[in-house]
Image (cartoon, rainbow, N blue to C red; front, side, top):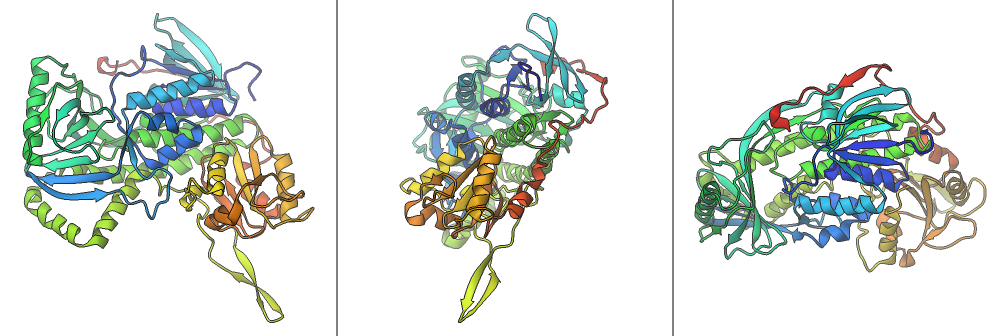
Length: 593
């Protein structure tokens, strides 16, 4: 464990992933430094979509209300081709329960502003103009070199280093982690005022016959994010980096506005006037990722670990989820509540998700740009069928939402996931026998909120969501499993005392002097939703995923569920790099500044 006053984690990069990591580490009591090479906050936005699973994460972090106040809830996707409306697909989350059945359209600058305010409340001050230039790993920590805005270089010591420093990540390069994948298309993004009679209650996609464009409505009336999949030739930066922007009031900006106005009018079949863009960026995006996200005491997350197409708006959301996944694990190890092996599950769980994301964004990219020469003729026919067959329409809606929302991401194959057999006792005459039955939802590896627990008027549902804001693990025991000693209530009480620093233990419904503190559930709504019969239990990770559950809580089954944490264990594992090896930052190319 770090000595008194020593920095326990340095986070490099104050974008959405870095801010999330710093927030969650500080919320768990770690001493955190957050540094960023930029002179100050970004003034332009790449990402504009926060999907439901990320909104659930923001709820746990306590920042979702501030986010909702700055964005617009989007619940539809409308498609046009050559001036003809093809279909409007409404959001359908009926098979994916969530308290946020929508995508929040919010500029990345606004998302970052909310997170900056949140980390400031926790006492974390962002150190702008501070660049990481080198690192050295040891068995008990990391020594880093930091260069200030004045060029002064200083050393700093930390227990852990988290690189959230973007697509040109210095941390990733120092570790020698290679981005594997392929380059892709050149697109243009623009934020601009738009005059049109289109209602701003949906995202619009339109095909002109030769290209595709998208329009996403901001909360600010009359302002839209525009995406052009076939921009006019223009200078661009390195792959994945923005090229020079057309500033408002310049001839270039006028040409961009005229070009977008003409193309959108042709595709939508109605007059559209695009005003002077507040910001434009022509860039060539990539589809690349690292194959591991940890080297000893150093980690990467967000764009430092993967870069890809903006087609489905997954980059920022994925980075936030990664930072959230890593932070609780790192804090638990640093505070001595788990063995260093717990940190291996970060790459184990998140690399496969990154791989799947590359595949889904590749598909989304193809569908968004739709260059096939037959597309203009085929689209009306295809979507006439979609409109005529409600079941097909619903299936498409759920398929699209399932891939974008993040609600179907799970950790069923994780080494942190334990599945106990579920049994109940059936009585036949005077004979009793154990009968195996399917485990109720949510199964281990799924979000606990995959269950229908989202009724704000149900006290039990509200109590569960309040509980999920606790940064600790949660053990839920259904009322009725009473008794001292090795009975379910006795096991729960013992666990509540033994693991109080990192485990919250609650009795769902009822109250018993022999059991842990109750979680209010009048009428049993929550117990029914979670499939918790009397004495049944569910163990929930700090990120809201079910780690284990069973029909009867005993010390043996609880020990099996907690075994992946390696309790007790040494506080810190051995660094994978040999002590004394110093890594220097590579010289930066001019375009990377």
